[in-house]
Image (cartoon, rainbow, N blue to C red; front, side, top):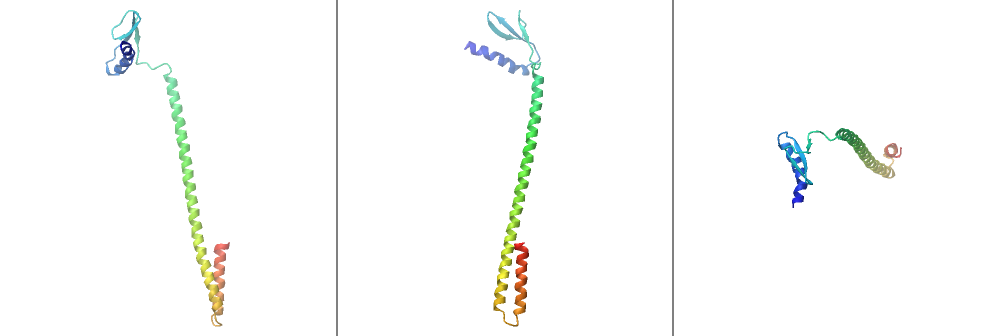
Length: 147
């Protein structure tokens, strides 16, 4: 149990350090035992928790690089999302236009069929009018659906 406390002591000291006023912490070696205290000891070493680690500048630089890379990736992802959204909208508009054309062509085909039936059943008085309507219905269908 004593060994567990001995390992927890440096951690506890580090955790309590920000809560305590700025005091020096000393690491003392006595009879093969390491202890931490706020009182200087012979041959003890002063621990400085305020100084950044020697590789802090490199860590900050790496963090800045990672942040820039992350921002670049996010920008690229947003651009891809925008392209995909535009492609979906364009496909949706194309599908809608095709459906409208199909519906219109179906109506024109039916109109042409009815005009042909009227032409076949026309008597001599209405024959010219029926021919004209049949021709116009066929032209409308051809202009809108075959061309």
